[in-house]
Length: 334
Ligand code: KDO
Image (cartoon, rainbow, N blue to C red; front, side, top):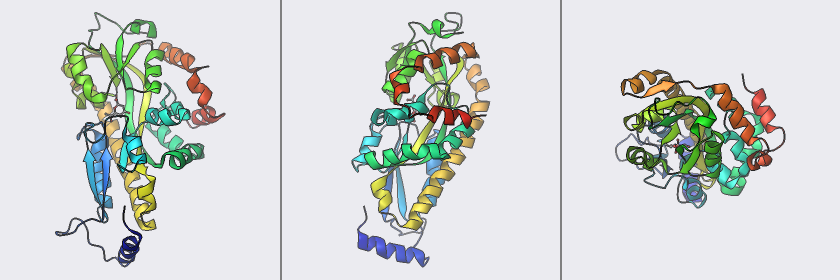
């Protein structure tokens, strides 16, 4: 955190256009924005932050990312921001649901329809009370929504060994899901036997057979090389998954109004850039994955949708959703 006097001086300099760019030799940025993610350096969300966000804030802040859970383990980032040990993370709705159960609505199977729907939901006034709660109670600002993609079921078994057409075909399948209640519930709702595990352990678990499979979008299957250790992908599209660019409220409050505007615009620009990249990848990677011996096919989507949705009805998760919000989300769909 910068001291008030220094901040005041900086804001005067910035206003007068006298601040040097960090691209200039000898320039030392006033502060450092750290970002922790379980994703790799080549994950499109990481690339977006490094190539779009970082240069836009470089006039006043250095950017220091920690990939593959190296800075904070997956699932501990929000607490780290809250305690003042981290500036930013690429946070999931499932992680937020650990603190605020109502966030499980954004982590529920077959609720978001596509990337554009996610953006409409995030920018709609329906999100205001959600954002305010996270800000007031956790000290975290949700700046923008990032697109992760359509999650599918990716298994070690060949399709000959296990043909996944409907949820009952997943009975007894040891499916790795990330380690929070909302994720585990989704795994069960799909019909599988979910196992919690950090993302960074999944490749090894798949290669040794410690789990039968995992669920993630196609770009992640390629980025994490899961296609090397699996044999099939059933295109269940059970979750059009998102992440929020989460930012420390304490750091935010120490920024000038101009700096806040720059950070907000940088986050929006990174999210938009990453979304397009991720959509491109999602649409073009199936051939590459198939050429590596992984069968890709579409199961009975109606059977999956009906089953998953029926599991949420009357669940403890649905009980935490504020009245009318699901209807508003649905109304923002296509
Ligand atoms: C995962 O653990 O499967 C997941 O896809 C969950 C997401 O919320 C996100 O954290 C992601 O991992 C990591 O960024 C790695 O891609």
